[in-house]
Image (cartoon, rainbow, N blue to C red; front, side, top):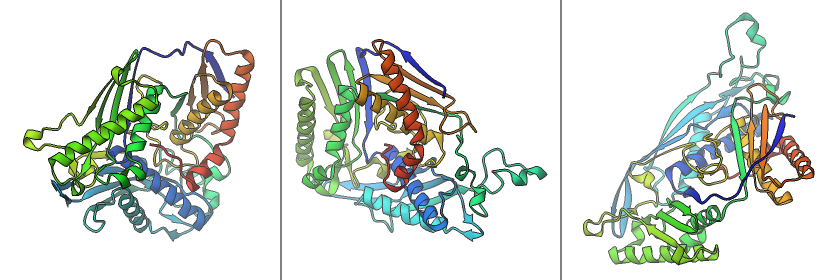
Length: 411
């Protein structure tokens, strides 16, 4: 196995920037929907036919609708358009799969749960843009009838599903991971999770889920700006809106204090676009900007480690919705992060992990695997790192099962 363990100065920088798009942000919704479709489709085909059939829903999009919002009242006036883009098997052994009906059911279930304020009959408009065209490799040459691509999306039997015999990388791609999280990364994630938790929304029903956080640390100084939507049905007037802002500020400051961030060293801004003189406020019908023209697309939001961290190693791969059996853009990304977390948990070494695939290469044997650790790592630790990498790659089939049956948070 081509594993390189390199030593590098991984001391904390004087500057870092961390972003988190909350669970109700359109991009996060798109990621979560794509992953839900892949998981549900995998479960369905596995139970019906004995294998996960070929599919990818990693290009799903949400196009924003329109809403009417006033204090005490908010409702949708134009539906959220769901673009189901991707590819999926449409039959097995000649038996058609009711693809559109299944996807419609799963989309509606997802959005009703994510945005309880919407009317499912009126506020969801689904558009199907699916293909069953194979990736390059399916040719019309006479010899190609024995190739793996000929019946890629219409397998005649399990014999046409090549990955049941040998797992290979479907693409040339890169998965990255790093550990541990910095103090700023931890606090940004905790703030969003706390504000959008079911408990918080039960206590404060006006709290929307499209919370967005952008935070900077410059040496010991913290600069944080946030957008926190309020749900109009639970905000009777502007004074209530202002009180809710103060409640939000208090929750955030309490969270910062729990992570040792002193108020004197922190500048916190919330809803900086609010203009009270003209009632231009972050007041919504659903708690998400998806209701008012904003769009969400897979891969534009949080990375596998649930944050956007441009000062740290990161990949722009959109993992959500990819096939969980062989798609490197999902499996190597999750595996790289798990390797990194395990190295830190077992060896207490700050590290960065990079797994690169080569299309058609053995899935369990990356084209290049690089782990960067601090300069004080011992030779014995290097050997343990190599073992951790190899073990996590061997666990990929178990990871596939975990993704399908339990779900793995990708956003």
